[in-house]
Image (cartoon, rainbow, N blue to C red; front, top):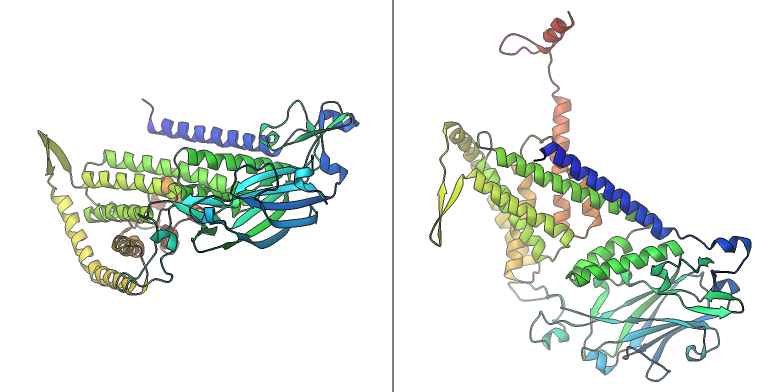
Length: 524
C-alpha cells in the first residue's frame, strides 16, 4: 500500500509529466520544419506557395440549400469582394435571403470561393473553396417570464409555438462567418507534410515545381451559441456578418487541432452548449492568455483532486465531533447541493458542474459521519440508526445552537425578503428555477458566516486563488463567480489578524515558562 505522501507525490509527478508532454506537443503544432532544399533554391521535393506569385484574387460567397453544387444553378451571390487583398482585414454585414425550405426547419449552406479576379469560380481551375452550414439545430432556450403576472420582455417565438415540445430542436441561424487565409510564403517538405494542414491543401503542377493554392479556412470556433438566432417561418431575410483576417501557419495548425478537439467532445456526448464553453476559452482570449488558461485549468484540476483527497482522508480518520459544529456540516452539505442544482438548472459548463457534483457527494458522506449514521437492511427495507454523543460533543452542540439562534435572526428575514423581491422583479423560466435561485442567493450571501475561523494547511488554501483565476476564464453564472471570492475575504481577514495580534513570546504558560526563557536555556 502506498502512503498518502507517496500517493500525492505520484499524482504530482504524473501531472508534471502531463504538462511537459502537452508543452512538447504544442511546440510540435506551432512549429513546422521547412523544406531543406528550399534554402539552396532547389525545387526537388518541395511544395511552394502559389501566393508567392502574387496573383490577383477575388472572394465570392454564395448560398444554397444543397450540400454540393457543380454549377452556378440554384445559388445566390451574397458577397463579392473584387481585388481581394489577403493582407487586409475586413468585416461586412449582408442580408441573406432565406428560402422556404430553410424556414421549414431546413438547412442553408455557404460556399466561399477564392479565385482569380474577373473569372467565375466555376471556370477557374485554380480556385479553392470551402463549405459551411449557416444553420444548426438546437433546442430553443425557454422563455423567462414574471411568474406572478406572466409578462415577458419578448413574445414567445413562432418556432417554439409550432413545436410539440420545448425539447424539440429547431433550426437556428449562424449570424457570423469568419474566414482566414494562410499568408506565409512557407515552403513545405513534400515528404513530410503536416497531416492537419494537408487536408486543406490543393496542389497544382506549374512547370517542374509543385505549388499549393491559397489555404482558405473557416473559423468554426467563432460560431458561438450567443450569436445564434431562431429562424422564424415568416422571416425572409437574415443578417450575416462576414469577417476576414489573415492567419499564420502556426496559428492555423493550432486552430485546426482545437476545432478537431471540440468536434471530438461533441462525438463523446457533449452538448452544443458544453462545446460552446470550450470554444469561448479559445476565441475570447489571445494566445498568451490561452497558454495561461491551460495552466490555470490544469492546476485547478490538480488542486481540486488533492483537496478532495485531503478532505476525505481527514474525515475518514475522524471519530469524534468535539470542536466541530454539526449544524455547520449540515449547512455546508445543504449549500453544496443547492449550488450544484443551481448550476445544473443554469446549464453551466461541465468543467464547473462535475467538480460541484463530486463536492456535493462528499458533503453528503460527511453528514453521515457527523451524525454517526449507520444503515442496516431488514430484507429490502433500510433502517437508519443514529449514534450518541458524549459530554464534550454535547457541549459543542450547545454552543453551536446558541450561535445559530442569533444568526437566524439575520439570516431568515433577509433570505425571505430577497426571494420575495426577485419574485416580483426578476423573470424566471419556472417556479423551480426561482426556488433554486432564491436558495443559492442565500447560500452565496451567508456562506462565509459558516466558514471556520481557522484555515487548514492543505492544498485547499492555495486552490482558493486558483479558483479566482478560473472564475474569470470559464463561463459561469455571475453569482457563482462572485461567490468564489468569499474564501479570499476570510483569508485576508485571517492574515490581518495574524499581523494585528502577533505571538507574544514573552507570555508564560501554565508552568511559569516562556518561549524566550526556553531559548536562553537551550543556548546556555
